[in-house]
Length: 387
Image (cartoon, rainbow, N blue to C red):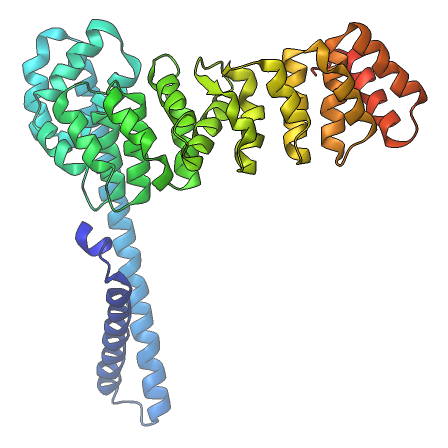
């Protein structure tokens, strides 16, 4: 049934089914019409046959719906009873053998209870549940189901196996990362990133270039932050000279919004790739810069593109370099885009001291938009806004 539903030929199969149903319906109408010999008018004969067949179909459908609902309710009641029985047995360590026997008899209910237990239990209790799963009847089938044609079945298998630390489970999840369905591949990527196999995680990060933007976003979200995986990947990517890898590494830093002790070369300010320069200064507050910070920020404030200057001015609000006050004031007075002037004014407000006083002079004396931007930065700073 699964092969039929997820078959590549399903559109043709559906069209064929429609034709078969219409043909069967027409045959039924013709047969009933031939039985209605009391009608001499052919129009009345076929109209009556049509009404009779239609009423018969509706009656059959009604009976089937009622019977189906009754069967469904009985099935759900029995399944709920089996779930309660398994949950009670799982709470008793002396009933492990009974649970293993039930896993062969009721595999679906067993997996449902195990999945819930793995999400809620920790420590030795969780280890016991893991052992029960690895020695159960459905375990071998789970490893093969990661390649199932049915995405829901494959995702469930990945979700369970992804919580185990055995080599067999990890291999099955890694195989699922090449599944034909994108949602299954995404579930496998998520399981790998949430697991403990750093080699597989690094291989996944190195393959970011072959993924869609949505897949990258999900991986950025689930990438572990408490290991050496991300810092190592980011450091290697930033020094690789490959523009695509550099952009991806900077995007990881920006998405994580956490300090990553990865050395970043100051030479990225001279990159011919505009996106790299923009993202570099946006990510700079979370990186460990190789080189002089003041010179790097000055280079960004003097960049030919206003977007780079805006991100460099924003970084100045974080690092607060006093020697760049004059350049920040110059951007406040003469700018190409409001964004760069806004970030420069907020950086001056964050610097305090002389920079704060000179920003107030711009707010009081400078004409035009410069005065408006400086006034907004002053008010924002007084009211406690972040730079």
